[in-house]
Image 1 (tube, rainbow, N blue to C red):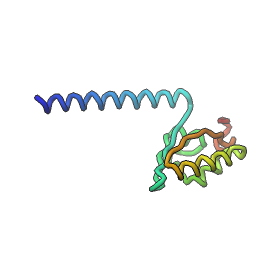
Image 2: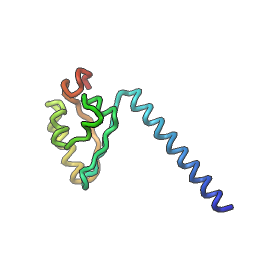
Image 3: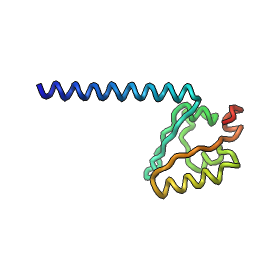
Image 4: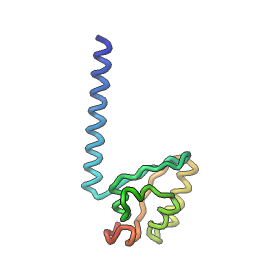
Length: 110
């Protein structure tokens, strides 16, 4: 009986997680946004297909190094982007906003 209850609780938690992920995916698609995550210790990165498209890249071309990404950041925002990157490397935390170049967004202007 205890095993059954544990599995039921675990199944409900997995269903709730899947539903939450679906809602997040729908919100990202509807807002024409994307997201990426980088492990600062290993350098491994994950990009959503939406963020790759916003930068005018195929999903296979992303993820890229921070240096390569900086080239796709609007010139007025590069100093801010570099500051965010440095802060993230120091603290292990970070989030921010910046604009991409027109060529990066293939005219989508973001």
